[in-house]
Length: 318
Ligand code: NCD
Image (cartoon, rainbow, N blue to C red):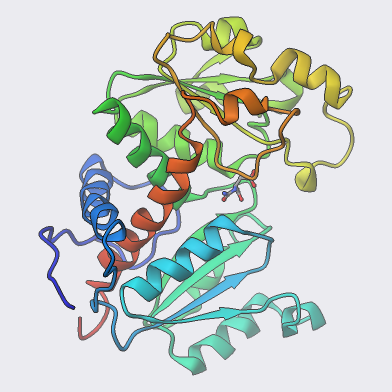
């Protein structure tokens, strides 16, 4: 069934490499388009044909559950041929450079490439070497994870009715988090107030330059906030010891009902996943009435459909 979208929004760029550089109109346009897909995804018949004939390749050089599966589902629901390129057994592991990978990919003529890589900037480098295809950053090192910030924004907007004027506390391992970075840029652009809450070892030096308030304990950080966004300790990006012990970290920085009570009574809790229960978040809160964590996963598919659709409208012969 090819029901045309009500929204004719087109993203005025070929790639989505980050939130940086997107305007309020770009962000709202993507969120409005995603709303249509939330409805579609709740129907029995979930298929559109707007990407029919297009090839989407997912290349995940880093582990992923939610992001990779939701990009796969999103592409399939729009009618694209989706291929997951296995990177654990690929030639990259045999020493092939990213540039050689790009040359190989060019020969396969994909229309859309979704890439996750452990190095900041690797996705942009790959994009610069590819002809005629759109590249979506599914997370590059500690740099950006644009579709995560967009799905978080959609979840917030649907539950609070707006983004502008809200206070959002982002708590935990800010230093190693591309989710924090993309969210800070998006939330600032959309007029929310962002507070980062973390021990000083997990805060990038000069974070204030990003236009955030810094709080160094949970009571101060959560006071009066509308949204509490928790982050995992990203140990795969740590060399050395950043926290004394897991139990001490949970005691001071883990979100439990006692700490959540510092926030507004109607505050909502978010987490991009994967969650480490008992480290940064208590199960009672993660599964509780104020949690939006499951809804974030649902919004992820809709947002990725919106990004694929909006970028595909720019492809040659679209
Ligand atoms: C995040 C990521 O990969 O950056 N997860 C995700 O995309 N759902 C956050 C994380 O790994 O902690």
